[in-house]
Length: 412
Image 1 (spheres, rainbow, N blue to C red):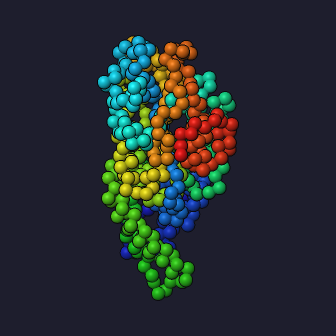
Image 2 (image 1 turned 135 degrees about the vertical axis):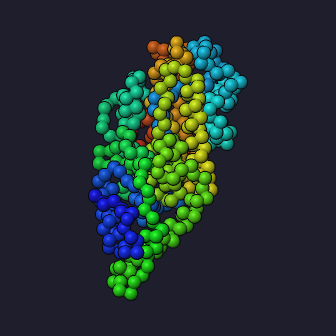
């Protein structure tokens, strides 16, 4: 394990040898390969040593915990069965952000409405899996392992890591101190990047010092110095660029979805080697007072994604990013006595970016042909995962998802 950097260590007495000993740079790759955690310094180092090639697709997975109500997210405002089932919860036509003559977005999704108009938003309808489970834990486990019929300990993104030929320990990053099930494979895991870190190492001073040549240097030591000098020049260019980006917060401190996505934006702009990122937002278990609660949560989601896309807007990497947003289940069609909804089944899945084929995909479930008061799923989520693995992560879907239903053609 690497010894922590001691800020009391005087920089004028620091040598390359003591710096490498304190930071553990020599063994960093081995440490990361065998552990789930990583630091911001690990990310910047890997971005310098193994940057993601230009035009490489990047996946950002947004998990909405609690079971987001799909019917009040993509609202079937023109369906009389919707109003009849939810007299106190239904949105009128003049309250929603209309998509067409039958459906509109929740009023909290102003930015997504613009994405729809800009043809950057794909809505996959009626998404679920066979024999649905209304338990938060069981259903989320199914979504994250992509194994509805057979329990397994590995997540679908973890299996993608297992099969990937690139050994980089930062091939996938989960933002936060713990890893979700989806990011854990049999042999490899995504790295967890906590956004509550101690004060950053004063890298400008350290890199400048280590990049100075010395007449007494051996050939190897001279090459080390030259590499640090080059790193300093690269870092200066990156920092200058990042200073111009409207990011919300520094790496430390902000655990919100906005804060998580700002960290993802920084990683992408640095050229971190990650092909996939995982972030999350909770608070969607709306058993009571749903209208105000869900709208507020959807507004949080909307604004965080808008800020993330703004942060990337000036970079050529912006067009490489695909955002996938899902929840463990939708809600029941009928509202409850507390002006909320209870655990249901099918819901919507959303894809955002230049690489998506915009519009609706899959059939909207009937609000009258139900199973025990729940929507019948019309799209198996594994068909979307299969396409994401193939077209965004450049993987073999059969190695990751197994035998999956036919793809919908939701990605370019």
